[in-house]
Image (cartoon, rainbow, N blue to C red; front, top):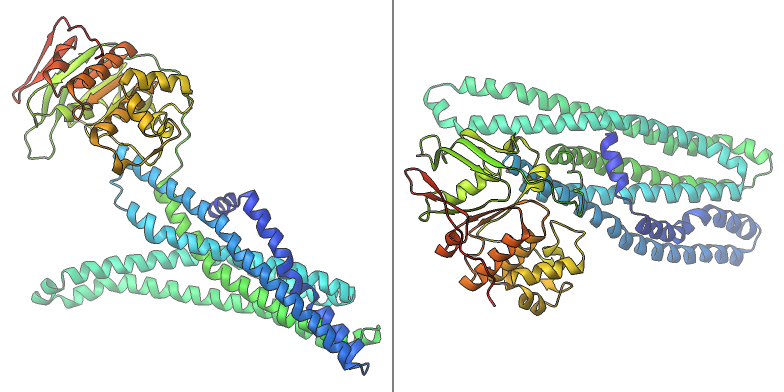
Length: 552
């Protein structure tokens, strides 16, 4: 529970929190002065034979209630400034965790949709409810305490100790309640899974006369679920006891101490004001806190814990603007891969060495396995047999962040995202300055496109870009990457031959290793070595590359 509480507290941004505190001041006004106003209305007005004075005091309470209503309205409007950024941050963690799991092969991300929809919304709503409940309690408790002290410090000494005792008892039950709520959720899920499995085979069980076996399969989870629900009922009973101690015991204490208080100079109006503070201040505040934290708080802790467990630890931030790493040789030994246990291998027993700084083109008919080979060389696919190493280190054993430092891959369908042009171009090197970005745009031949989009500050709407325009932006992004190995998997197939030649010329001048999955014959002519795949094997040949010149 401590982890979830720390994560929730980390979402309290200073500016919205300050605004929330500021608007809580007018909201606290009625709770602060209600008992004091009633005491003056009784003592100085009605009991003194001046009813209009009493009415005037009560009218002041109505005015304070109006001011408090304005504060309440603004408080609820301000809560969104805390809740929505927290939700966005958590959604980013879920997406990042799912992508990491998909890349490393530890999970297929099948639960990401559930995390992003139902569970994330439960956390969002319960987080908002928790903020409202805790803030409302704190505002009322502070206001009532100030009012009691203003009314008579002796009353505060009678009211506040039992109230604090009830609050402390409730706080002591929270850990137990969270553990039991978590067990109840798990028991409910186990029961649902077991019942689903039995119902799926109901027809077979009935046909075999095995209904008793079906009942025995669900009996254990049913008992566990019932036990978990009973334990939650005991927690609810404990919460009721806490409310009795913190909410009703102060009232009994005031009534029991009334003669003693009157002997010490307190008036009937003062004691009535204290009762009003308890009945309409502390009791509703404590009840809201217990019900809010006991429901929204437990849902928040349990559901957030599940999301944090599923999404894993956040990826450490990549060092922006990192210098290019030392180029490494890529080497494949006995590389074999098939898309199923009974499928023919797409790549079989391939040995290939790509020295640092090489320019290799991979050619062959469509569907022969060129893109599969590119994914294997980049560590995105795990081979069925053999290894791919970079500098002697097996690529698939590297963390995704290390892989990204060594290679950059542009697939046939280039990815761009909604944001500014600069965000898209400098994504792999956030510290790239305007000069470097402009030089990269020039080298790739994307100047006209960037100008049409409004320059580096212009907005990118992916749906309004053609496939070729998306490829140009992705090529500039890869060009700016510090990774020394660049793999273009038909990354220029939507460009005309002149634009393709310009892009390849830029990457050749950039330095490092260039691997091109060839779409046109020109790509193979410009490479120093060509690997040809024909479905039966692979043939590697060296050649004198054609002169690479950008189109004019």
